[in-house]
Image (cartoon, rainbow, N blue to C red; front, side):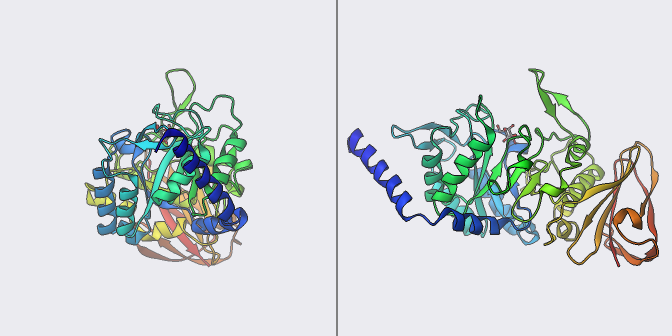
Length: 402
Ligand code: GLA
């Protein structure tokens, strides 16, 4: 086929797509129904950065399907940056032929055959953050290609976006995704710069609220050019305060992917990280090597009682309800009226922390059953408050059920 003939085929395909597509409003309702609770899955970036390949993705999908992660709710297997290298003469995006010799469609089929869903990454600018081709000016063509490949989830980054308006850029890609008629969860990775929580509902299913997480308890390190920041766990939770009301079924604040198991924090800190993400109703996107996990890390990522807090159908994001210096109480209302509660000790020594019923929105005199979600133990009925001694950088996480 000569060049003009190829162009004609592409144009005809795009027209066909425009004519027979599902109505965008219907497509959006169908797509948003997939994220009535925060999405759960795995993403390659935090551990593997640009070292992605079809072998890696297949073996991680195998691990999730067989190590209890799938049963615990992890579903999306997402390749982050660096799978793409260039565009063909018609502008279609091309995967790295060395690292993905079977092609992206075959990889998506493989992930689907393991009972999981498949995700991919692009960027609203001309280049991705790792310098690969971005989607700017190719939005509809990329969306069409993703749909043909069987993509179920798109993480859409914000590097090289120049003077683009974020709401316009994310709306354009969302419209392109909806026009394909395939439900593709849309993960907006705009780092919170243009406050996407104010306009993201109805565009994306989740939006990053901060710069990139780092595998640290506390960090707030600037990038070499002086712009801000690389964040530790406690830096990120501070930035979630005040955003609670913007999250709900179908649209979630995203405090970034999990670092649990990547080696930079203690197991106690990883437990706190996971608990806090659950109380925030955050997307639970694991970011470690799931093929080689210590049992302690596996137990954190698959704690069903903590996951149930994250996935509670009311879809309420929890909030910090008390703060006494570096001793904090966080609480999340669950659908049956129960509160999930975290006592968080940010200090370097063991401390007693108290959650008062009144801070949870309960009357003082209420008698409620307290259950420890990490010890998997009922602690009995209590009135007015619950107190516990909490180790440095640790949490005690309970449910308080009237
Ligand atoms: C940005 C994003 C990260 C990751 C990298 C990939 O920094 O915020 O989550 O996707 O780009 O280059």
